[in-house]
Amino acid sequence: MRLIDSHCHLDFECFDQDRDEVLQQARSAGVCHLVIPGVRAATWSRLLELCRRHSGLFPALGLHPYFIEEHSPEQLEVLRQMLRAESDILLAVGEIGVDARKPSLEVQWELFRAQLDLAQEFSKPVIIHSVKTHDEVCAELRRRRIGKGVIHAFSGSRQQAENFVDSGLWLGIGGVITHQRARKTREAIRHIPLDKLVLESDAPDMAMAGRPGLRNSPQWLPEVLDSLAELREESPQALARQLWRNACDLFECEFPQPALDEKAAAGSLV
Ligand SMILES: [Zn+2]
Image (cartoon, rainbow, N blue to C red; front, top):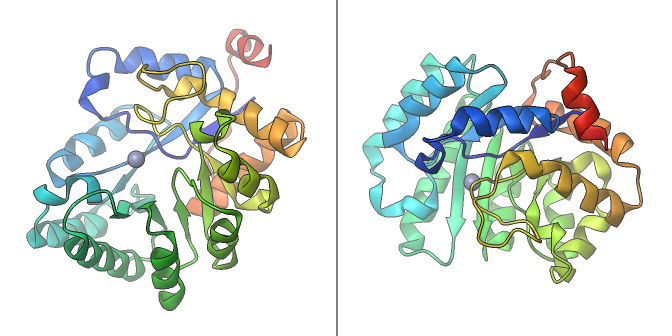
C-alpha cells in the first residue's frame, strides 16, 4: 500500500530527537510522501532545509492563525519573496486560515485574505485551517473562485462538506474519522465524491482512536485509511490508489511512485 500524508508537521520541535526514525517508520508503513505545511515565519527556512535533506518531503509555507500574535505584515512580503525564489519546490500556500477559538479574528481574516492573494498571484493551491468558520471561509473562496485547495482536518456537517466540494475544494481526512463519536463528520465523509478526499495525519496533533495522549505520527496513517475504507465500504487497496491520484490532482504534482522495499511492503499489507 502506498500513501501520501497530505499534512504532517514533521518540522515541529517535538520530532527533533527522533525525526529520522519517525520518517523511517512512516516509510515502512507505506507512507511514501509527506507534505509539510509551514506555520510561522521563524521556522520557514528550517522547514525548507528539512525538505531538501530528505526525499519524499514536500514543503508549503504559510502563517497559521494559531500563532496570530507572532505574525506581522512584513512577513507577507517575505512569503512573497520565498514563493518567487522557491517556486519549484513549494507545493502550496499553507497552512493558512481562520480559527474562531483564537483571538483577533479580524486580524486573522486580514492575514488569511492577504495569503489567498499570494496563492492566486503565484497560482498555488492552498492548505486551509478553518475552525468554526466553515461558512464564511467557503463564501470567501467562492467569491474569489479558488477551487485548488484543501480544507485540512475537515470536521463539520454534510452540508458544509458539500459546499466546499461544490467549490472545487478537497477535504483532508485524518484521525477524526477513527473516532466513532464523530458521527456528523463520519456521515459527511461517507457521502462526498471519492475524488475529493485526501489523507492526512496532522502529526503531531489529531490523536487517533486508541492512542489518546500520544504524539501522533505519520506511520499510523494506514489506520485512517482503514477507517475510511470501512466507512465507505471500499477495499483499502482501491481506496489507496484513488487517494494517491487525488493528492496529485490537488497539489498539481506527480508524486513519484517509489519501488517498495519488499520487507516494508510485507509489513504494511498485513
Ligand atoms: Zn496543521
